[in-house]
Image (cartoon, rainbow, N blue to C red; front, side, top):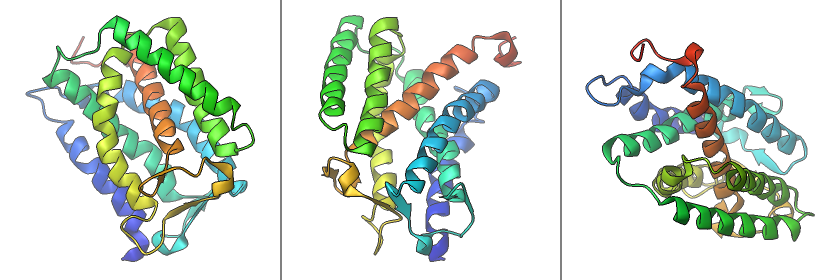
Length: 237
């Protein structure tokens, strides 16, 4: 049973949001399945290749004790599922909050200044930690995303910044389960010479930047695709 630890964590994180996606009386999230799964796949390909490269470079490693044993590009199948199932559950939370609390969002001015602050923090951490691979790549990507937000001023950030605070709560518990909070050994272990060495519980602080970059990138692509004719649902037509 221990070998199914990571797999079950993936499945149970995804299961309830996925079931509620079919609920027709309210948001009926599954109607956007083409745009949503395309967004996950496109963004996920980039992150999974990055993940695989880091595994080959021993920036992190996976404990076979908690895995079913099947790997592709040095990544366990559970890690591949992570990039499909966890983003689905996380973005479902974002759109649920948007549906149930439509009037709660940051002002454009507040969003702009938060973005400037996040960009400045990200830039400083990236520049002064260029020799730490995980920190440099992870926070560097986040910083580029914040620069893009400054340039293009996407309106979606007004809601997503607030949603991410809520999304991070379940993410924290899921990632804690992977980094050793609830098991004898961590499922995922990190080379601390390649990160800041700062932990939130058992989670490297870089993982929060990683999570934001992954989820906000998916949200941006999803919002773009669902307006296109090819990806519009029959419910909308």
